[in-house]
Length: 175
Image (cartoon, rainbow, N blue to C red; front, side):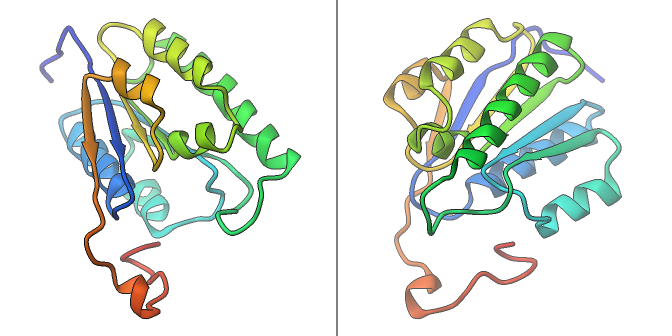
């Protein structure tokens, strides 16, 4: 595997579908080239189909969830906050270990927007990341400070979605 000297910071944000999917596609591409990938899923605690697939098919990708379920329809609890803070501490250790080439902080933007995690803590991670580490932050509502610090920002914009017609999340497509 060809190693690169500089890793960049990506943000995938916006109200459209596809932020996590884009990050997972990058993870698969990286793993296919021999890179080691760590995916930290904030907020989420359910075993989505992509988690099952990654656990079954890739030894180069490790996934850990830092949530007790998906609480998008209720206010976050103190327990939700504890999960997020614990996750952030673990992620900081993992970054410092330099054991992974690509680290994805899935839904970290939501965790910041809901005040589960302080934006300054994420800025510190971005500032102190090892030079060669590729870092991806996903989720709606990316903070302006994070956007300014990132090297690549992609906004997923919803134009039309079948949720508006009452279609619920489908296994294998949305979950």
